[in-house]
Every structure is written in C-alpha cells, then in structure tokens.
Length: 317
Ligand code: FAD
Image (cartoon, rainbow, N blue to C red):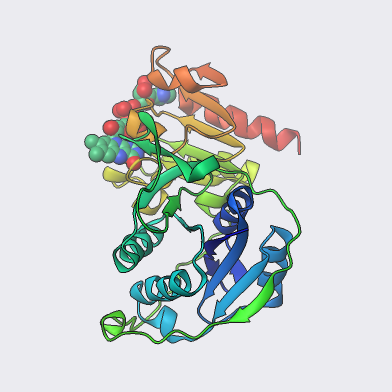
C-alpha cells in the first residue's frame, strides 16, 4: 500500500491534535507515514503517532529545518516525495501548512488543494470555498496530490501503528536558508485551553457591547473550562485580541459545544464554527441568522442570560 505522508505539527515535543486528525484520514487513504521536522522527537510524540496509526515516522531532527522559517519543511517533504513516491501528502490547512503545501507543489510540479474538510476514496477532497458557503469535490490532476486539511474537520480516532523510526537528512538549498528566525517569543499561555483544540468554546460578538463586558463571556468560559472566541466585529472594535477571532479570516474551530453570544451569524463567522457538534445561541433578535444553525437557542439579552448561565453552572459543580 502506498504511503500517505503526514507533516507533523508539534510543540514542545508533543504532537498537536490536528496531526492526529490527519493520521486518522491518512489511514483511510493508504499507509500513514508521519514526517517529523526539527529537533525534539520524544517518546511522548512517538507514543501518540503510534496510537493514531502511523506505520512509519520519518525524523529529520536538524535544527536547521525549524530555524529557517517554512521553506526547509517543503524541501524535506519534496525529498521524501522524490525518494518514497507517496500516494499523497497531507498537511494542516493553517497559515504555515498552506505555505508549505504551496511551496511543495511548486517543487514537485504537483497540484495542491487547500481548505479541505475531508478526503475520500480516490483522494477526492471536500473543499470548503466562498467562506464555507459552497463545498466542492476536487481531485489533484497532476503529480503527487498535496492536500491541506482544515483543523477540526475530522475526529481523531486511535488505531495502533508501528511508528517505525527512520532518520532522514536533508541538504537544504541556499534559497531554503534565505530567511532565518532570529528570536522566538513565547506567548503568555493563559489558564484557558487553546482555541482551536478546545472541547468547548464561548464566543462573543458585537452584542457584547464593549471590551470590558467580555468579562462576562470569560466568566462563562471559565465556569465550563472553555476557550474564549470572538467575532470579527468584536476583534475589529478592539474588544478582544485578533488571535481569538473565529471565522473565515480567523480560526476554524469544531468543538463539542460552541456558545455564540451576541453574534448574528454572518457567513464569514459560520465558516469558522459551523461544524461544531452542538451550537448554543444567545441573541436578543429572534430573526438573527445564527439561529438557523443552532441546536439550542435563547432569545434574550446576553447581559442577563450569560451571568445567569454562569451562576447555574457554578451551582451544579
Ligand atoms: P453583528 O452582525 O453586528 O451582530 C451582532 C448580534 O448581536 C446581532 O444579531 C444582535 O441581535 C445581537 N445583540 C446585540 N445586542 C445584544 C444583547 N444585548 N444580547 C444578545 N444579543 C445581542 N466575521 C467573523 O466573525 N469572522 C471572520 O473571520 C470574518 N471574516 C470576514 C472576512 C471578510 C472578507 C468579510 C467581508 C467579513 C468578515 N467577517 C468575519 C465579518 C462578518 O461579515 C460580520 O460582519 C461579523 O461576523 C459580524 O459580527 P457580529 O455577529 O458580532 O456582529
């Protein structure tokens, strides 16, 4: 069975959830082979990759690969495409993943699909376009299919793989070394879970009314152990940082529970959250379009509903 290469996203020696999703997809398409770029391959990482079905792990542990921004990862994958002839390459459809995919496509003279939300038989990808308004089925017609899949579009399902380690060296070209990371500044990690990986997300929109009032959204989120998200109207107004924006031009989330408070449900917002398992809407306008995709809706003023909900959850703990 031909290999499906999966570029591993990792942080502090641990594998990110999106990689487990990609491995789950890869198992349906061929033999999953993970590609670890950079130092820090650990027993924890190996354990997780094996748990989610990686039969092989190509480890390129040179620091050069992560010190030179994105291009070396594309060169590493290109060398593996040339030597192993995989059936396809899967990467996360994140800002970095899409850049890797694009560069790899040029290097291997292959077609690339981004923003896939699924990949099926015959390597046909479901691709979400026009801000999630239209889904198309696409297939790469040239070279090795390179498919960038959106985080949270597949549920990760465990299945044991051998995770046989194979070291790989890659000779980086001068152009791959053209840009170098000079400093890494670690973002303050709050107590809340990371937005794209959280099981519960509580998001606020223009209806929240001010930056200060986002405190009620945060309190509800904390009572549930949830991440906080925001609509673009709220981030553009400076009420909440852009890093927490959910939607077409923000993050894509697909939690078990998504609570949208004071958000109207514009197509660009839906594009980032409509695959959430259960959607709860709090909005004072019963005609707000977001009710169309709600599993549960509360018509009311969020200034009353949200604190009541937080108090009720606190009582039940
Ligand atoms: P509004 O549409 O103004 O809705 C506010 C809602 O709050 C209303 O439904 C109102 O009834 C309700 N409300 C008001 N007061 C209360 C109250 N006290 N209690 C309860 N409910 C109340 N948007 C995104 O979110 N993410 C994106 O990534 C994104 N990308 C975009 C990309 C492009 C190219 C474009 C053109 C737009 C993009 N947008 C995005 C913007 C999007 O079109 C909407 O403008 C935005 O989502 C609206 O945010 P909102 O729902 O918070 O505000």
